Amino acid sequence: MAYKMSKLLEILRDGKWHETDELQQSMDLTECELEEITDFLGKYDFAEVGDKGRRLRVNKDFKKILCQTA
Image (tube, rainbow, N blue to C red; front, side, top):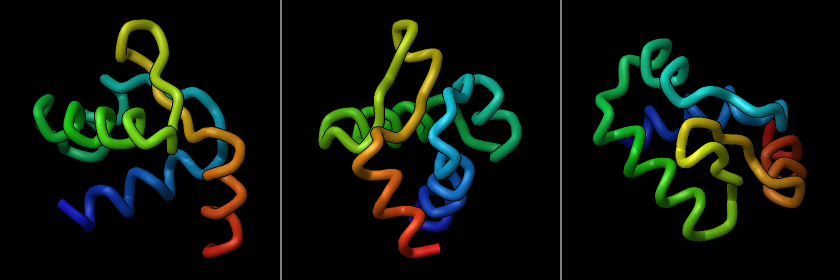
């Protein structure tokens, strides 16, 4: 799961909104896996979850951290 989280964060690093169904398909995640990751990122304010869980993007502060570690 850690590898999938890292890969997802690479995609989200751009700070744009990403549709969760597209992320699920492109990363070969189960619905449950994506929901766990989305819940975690939202719970700790690393990402914004929009449209009732159908969109995801990292928040500005976390994006700065991600860009520094690239």
